[in-house]
Image (cartoon, rainbow, N blue to C red; front, side, top):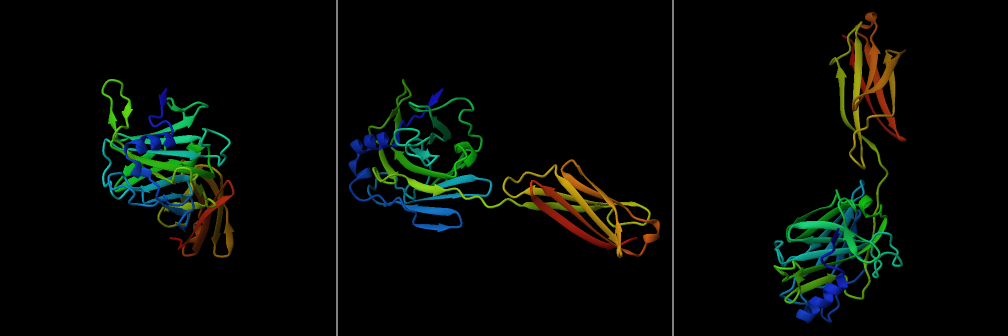
Length: 307
């Protein structure tokens, strides 16, 4: 079982303040209200320049896509690269309920340390993790002038409304014998400010659609007396998963006369097959193939002279 190396953001702030009080000094440290929002990206502004020696969070941008993947961009312009003496941690109240979880009301914690990022869950006494518990297959990070941490809402208890805070610490060392972190010379910045509550963020997911990924025919054009197929491949907009089931509807016409077709899935493609009459050469074939899956629909139409 693994435990959060940074056991509580406020405790870390207290340790950092002992070393360098200016790191989280008396100057107001931003606001818990978002400063700007575009689409579903929300920017939270923190005050800057409290201590030139400390990492300085200027803004945090939270956003999510229609697959429910949440991204936190933590801008730290005075730390261009992630160094081994740095630690970035977030505590997340995934159910937006301060009465549940840790004493701060948070349910999950994310810790980025020494090039690795981990997800922890409150177990009633501490933030802990075991192999695959909590699941964190979607958790990734990158760093360039600040950290970008990405995780699926599904791995944060299917959160819809969350609260969070962030701390960035530099100047850490590790005891070579015990492996414990040493905060003696550490400096830190926290957002939002201590005792200012947590930032709030709402996960917004648009209604899913089916997007056409590929459409083809076999053969290239309809031929009199031969079979002709329309093939359609579609994927969900929210997950990107290719549809492999559902209802396939086929509509065909030669001139004004209807032409029956049979529809089914073959692997990851919907296929409509028509038998072109032998006497139809020179006439126009018009066909439409439609996939209906969980109330979502994708279709493609086709028209060409029969050879």
